[in-house]
Image 1: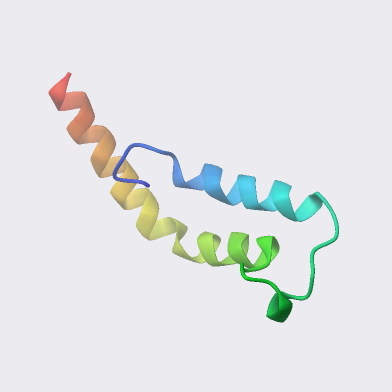
Image 2: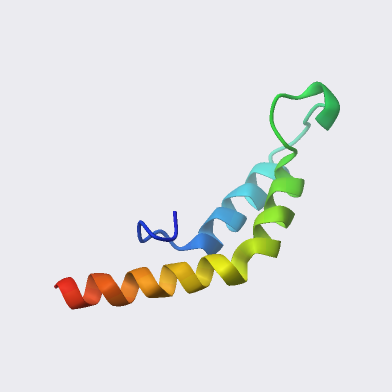
Length: 64
C-alpha cells in the first residue's frame, strides 16, 4: 500500500472508524480480525510503512 503511494496512516484511521461503528462478534467467531486490533497492529508497523511511503513519494516526484 505504501509503495503504491497511499498514506499508511490513513489505514489506521479507517480501522479506528470501523471499530466505532458498533457491535462486532467476538474475534474467535469472526472470519476477520477485530477492527481495533487491526488498527493497533497497523500502528505498530507504521514506522516501517512510512519509510516505504516516503521512498515511493521521492521516486514518484522524480518521475514527474
